[in-house]
Length: 143
Image (cartoon, rainbow, N blue to C red; front, side, top):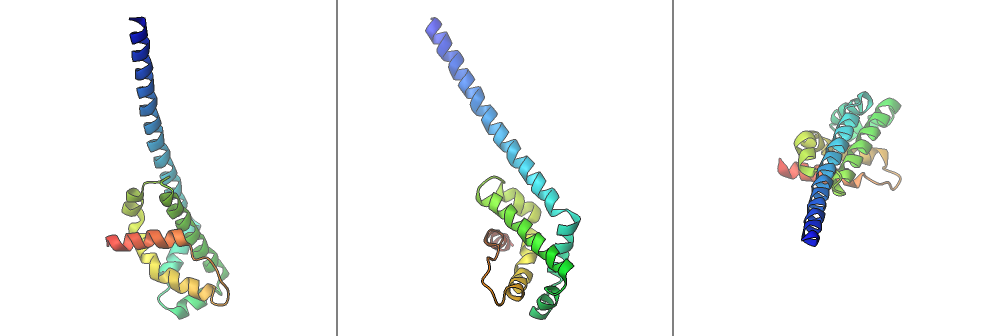
């Protein structure tokens, strides 16, 4: 009888451990999302997104790359989006939550970011924030 009781207690402890692990993982994802959300709302990143959204043509993009403050802001906004998307790719943040909250911003960034990348890196080979581009494409597909 003692062995059965010990086994029952062990199984109960294991079950509680699994529940606590799942809960902690969910809370960690939430906390990381909130930190990224706050990062995307920092004034410099917001200004960078606004400057990015203002790009309507290749000429706009070429002018922007000569404005150091706007250039830095756009670069920072795209880099922050790329980190957010990296976290989604690694499942450290829930994709659905990100697309619900940031999908519109990601969609709005697609064309201006292409013009920015082309203008900024026309003479050199450069990465193009691939995680951001993949997540933005998913946001665009959702409409």
